[in-house]
Amino acid sequence: MNFALDSCETLWRLTDRDLDTLHYLTLSGDERQLPSVYRVCALASASIGAAALAAADCFRQRTGQMQQVELDARRAAIAFRSERYLRINADTAPELRDPLMGFYETRNDRWIQLHTNFKHHRDGVVKLLGCANDHAGVSEAIRHWDGAALDEALADAGLCAALIRTPDEWSMLPQARAIAETPLLEITRIGDAPPEAIGSGKRPLSGVRVLDLSRIIAGPVAGRTLAGHGADVLLINGPHLPNIAPLVIDNSRGKRSATIDLLDEAGRTTLRALLRDADVFLQGYRPGAIAAKGFSPEDAAQERPGIVYVSVSAYGHKGPWSGRRGFDSLVQSASGIAWTEAQAAGQTNPRHLPCQALDHATGYLAAFGAMTALQRRAEEGGSWHVRVSLAGTGRWLQSMGLIEDGQKIRDPQINDVRDVLQTVESPFGSLTLTQAPERMLLTPPFWASPPVPVGTDEPRWM
Image 1 (cartoon, helix red, strand yellow):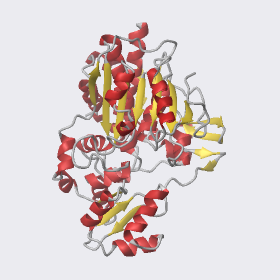
Image 2 (image 1 turned 30 degrees about the horizontal axis):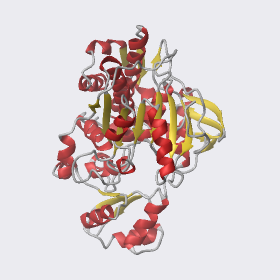
Image 3 (image 1 turned 180 degrees about the vertical axis):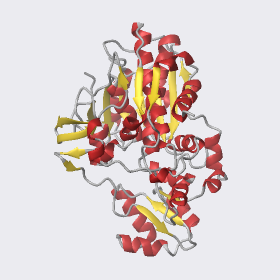
Image 4 (image 1 turned 90 degrees about the vertical axis):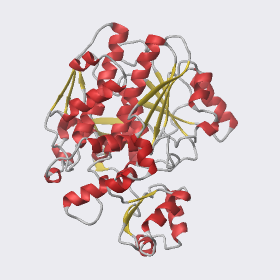
């Protein structure tokens, strides 16, 4: 059974596009590429393959020329670990994770994961626990807490954590049921507008303008994917918002980068002006957060009829956890993925996937949804809203079943993958980065510019 191709067909059916288009996609290679009992490589091949095929279909819609898309499982797996293979001037990139991030034992023989990569999240955890700001102090404090109570207390404080649950425990929660009732990929019409062509030029998305209001991995991967197919992607950061330097470098390829303060009316006016000339508005804030600044999907459709609005969230837009802060690893912990990996390894400590698979897959799904919505806009007009979530992607991965002895697969190190890396000169120095994994005969994907520091560019279109 080809899980990758079957999963890609599942995605294609969600969009009501012509299934014959799948004949132009070739997915090859052994899925046993990364040490995991989950079908991470099938997830990678399906999500990357669907996005690449959508790009080819956009090109066909405008030019009448269709092309073959090829993707090898090994290249897809390496792309899902792009941040892990980043090198700056041949040196290992700065550590992604804060020292306090990780798993901790609670009073009742349970485990909880803390996510403290942003300073204000770390400081908030230490303040709530009332302990020393170090690993020993946090560990000792958490041993006196009931796991479920601490999970709830941290969430109520707006902090980032997740109790380690089994898949069965997760399935009983109202949030899991809300996700089960929500499509993996939602594309809904939110307004009327005349049909518009998908850009112009020699690449699938040449002439398409994308506002990218996202950070960390999932949303930025979506913007990076669109840029790789020729879109003009303008990354917008708030001057007060923290970032993680290696992720900025890895995920900003092909993008320009500006800062706008949405806490200020002048900043909101600037963003509205950019929105009026945009084709895609991509945002990765918690449901309702960006809407509170006047940029809900409905606001955007009114300001710019014909907009494709893409929302990326952690736990989805429905259910009691919809407003909860979350990251890939936390969703793995909450939903039973980390527990299952630990059980398969015969260990007590929870264990994450060998890559940020939910982040990367969700990013490619968001790009796939954006390109599908651009096709619908070209055919029938309208403004469109695309929604994806990390938890929805996690549920999709869990539905694929497990690989026997999957954790015995060798973990590929950087010297094992040199053939799928490239060297790029940038303001950060000489960078070693992953190549675009898909192969397209007529319009091979590439990034036309190197990553740049946050705020390098003016907030305007070229």
